[in-house]
Image (cartoon, rainbow, N blue to C red; front, side, top):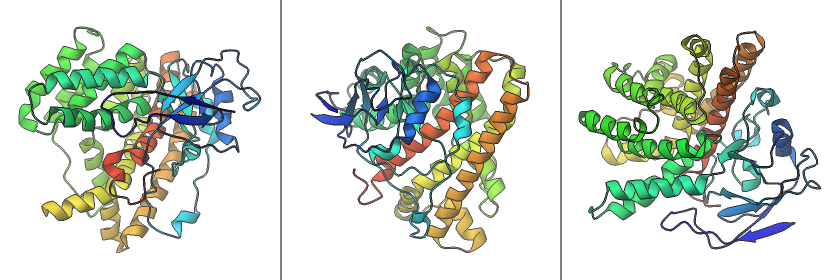
Amino acid sequence: MSYSVRLSWPGLRPYVDSSTRIRSSSIISGARAQAKLGAFRAFNSPQSSQFGSYSLLRSDTTVNKSLSVEDTREASIMKPVYGFNPVESRDFALQTPPVRRGFLSLLASSWENANIIKPELLGIPWLSSFPGCAQSAHHGEIVRSGQNYLASLLAGRAEGKQLVNQKVETVASFVVHLFPTGELERMKTLMKCYLLIFMQDDSKKVAAFRKLLSEQLDSRYPADSHLILNWVDDYFSTQRPSQCLDHLGRYLAYRVHDVGADVIFRSIRFACEANLSNAQWNETDRLRALCSKHFALVNDLYSYRKEVEESRVHNTPLINAVKVLETIRGIAPSVAQAAVCDLIWEIEGQIETEATAVKQGGMIVSSAQQQFIGEIILAMAGNVFYSATCHRYARFHPGSRL
C-alpha cells in the first residue's frame, strides 16, 4: 500500500519535492508508536520502498504486526536527497556492522514527538550498529521557525536569501535528527540557537554571539538557559588541547573539544527537559566521554573528503582522524577510513555496555536520568544519519544523490 502527498517548504533545498510516495514499512509515526520496542522491531522489516523527498505513512498493522495501535493519522518525514558511504575501500564494502539490539532496552522516551526511520530503506548506507534512528515529527515547524529567524538576522544583506537556504538546510537536519523527541517549542528555540552556533566562526565576537543566544533562551526558559550559555562560556574560555597529529588518543582529546560535543548533551537536557542533579549528571561521565569520541570520529569520517579538498585549496594542514591514522600507521587513506569506521563500531559496543551497566547497576534513581541515557543514544544514531545525508559532505562524493 502506498500514498502520495504534495508538500511545500518555500526556499528550502534540497528537501523540497512536489510529489512523493512511500510504503508504510519505512517510517513509524511517533503518534502511533506507543510501544517503543515494537516500533524499533520494525527496523527488521524485509520490505523495500521507493521514495521521493518527502514520505507519508498510514497505520497498517498488516505490515507491522508488532504494533497494536488504532491511530491512523498520516505522518511525513523530511527525506534527504543524498546518501553516501564514506569508506572508499572495496574490501571494507563487504563488511556490515553488528546490530546491537541491547540499545533497544535503553530507550525510555515517549515517541509522541518523533518518527522512527529505517535508513537502509531510504537508500542510505548505514555504517552503524545502532538499529536505526529517529526524526522529529515537528520538522516542518522547526524549519519554518529557522527560516524566519535567520531571514530577520540577515535582512538587508545581498546574500541573505542564499545563506538562509544553505544554513537552514544543514542545521535543520542536524537538529531534527540529534534531538528527535524534543518538545516543539524547545526545538524551535534550539533550531535558532544552532543556526547561531553553526555561523559562529569568529572567537573575537563571542560576546555578541552569547547575547543573541541569551535573547532566545533567557526570556522563555530562564531556568534552563544556563545549559547552553554555560557551554559558550566554557568553550571559548577553556584552553584547547594541542592539535596532536601523531597520537590518536591525544588527537581525540583535542577534537572532542573542537567539535563542541558537550553542547550536544546539554541540548538533550534542554530539549527533553531532563532535570538531572549534579550527582546524576556525573554518573554519566564515562558514557558521555565515549559518546563524545563517537561524535568526533563520525564527524571526521564523513567530512574527510571535504576537508581534504579544503586543505588543498587553502594550503592548510589536514586535521582529521583519518589523516592521523594514515600518518601513525603508514597506511593508505582508504584503509585509514576503514580503520576509523572499525573504531566507531568498537565505541558503539562500549556505549551499549556502559549504558546498560549504568542502568542495571542501580545508579539510575530517576526517570529523567534514564530518559537522558536513551536520548544520548538517539543523538549518536542521529548524528550518523545527518552525516551520511548532509549536502555539505555529500557534494564531495560523486553519485551520492539518491
